[in-house]
Length: 271
Ligand SMILES: NC(=O)c1ccc[n+]([C@@H]2O[C@H](COP(=O)([O-])OP(=O)(O)OC[C@H]3O[C@@H](n4cnc5c(N)ncnc54)[C@H](OP(=O)(O)O)[C@@H]3O)[C@@H](O)[C@H]2O)c1
Image (cartoon, rainbow, N blue to C red):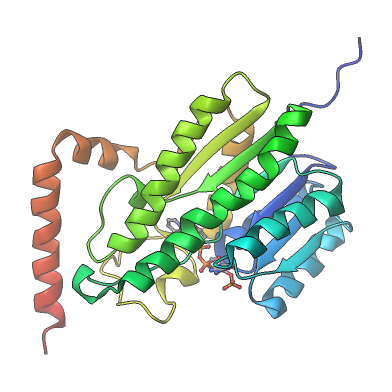
């Protein structure tokens, strides 16, 4: 009996579709996957940035391709997933990494803004997953990696919209992993903590309150590959799971402590 390559391993010929590959974690991940011989599909809005990443990916993996798409357009998100499947003859790993911040006090959020964040951070991954899932199940193999956030497992001040979108992604991933257990399709949930990317300085957001250390995007990308290949459903990068466990054990103290940070932040920014 011949034993083929382990489909859970990222290696030569693995076909990986990475959203949000024009910068930050997605860019670092795309380059890392390509360096390991994977054929990479890149998705984002900024064509110039995608072109630059694609050029580097093609040095190692010439069949790599890019799709320019605004994933807030959910029909387009689904279309890109299907186009990538067609172009590559299948997708082994779908990494739903694209995401937008929304650092805004809840009283300064509009319903339309919340809806937009939910579309990009939650509904687009859902649409891309549902487009590819029947095909993956038919082949009985595939890995869906959802890049959520520490903020998907705990509330962060001034990030209600972002937290809602990321906790939706956590819940969706967890329930999907249960539904798909026993099939060849694996689900992986990655919750980054503070990673050094553009997300901290994008326009349309209030200044971040957090100003502590941040992990390089390349280190986070290595962790995502390890999570993709490993057996654990959920991975925190860096490992800040203890914070989530502490808040779950004492939610009222967590809210009170966070509210004190809010007061301190307000005093610091008061003219
Ligand atoms: N950095 C952190 O501290 C941190 C912590 C926890 C979780 N995360 C998560 O990690 C993921 C990657 O973020 P990052 O830190 O690498 O930030 P980033 O450098 O800002 O990257 C975000 C990526 O998503 C893409 N994107 C955003 N909106 C999009 C849209 N409407 N349609 C298509 N693509 C879109 C961006 O590309 P275009 O602008 O070119 O479209 C970019 O490639 C996100 O899901 C984020 O929530 C990051």
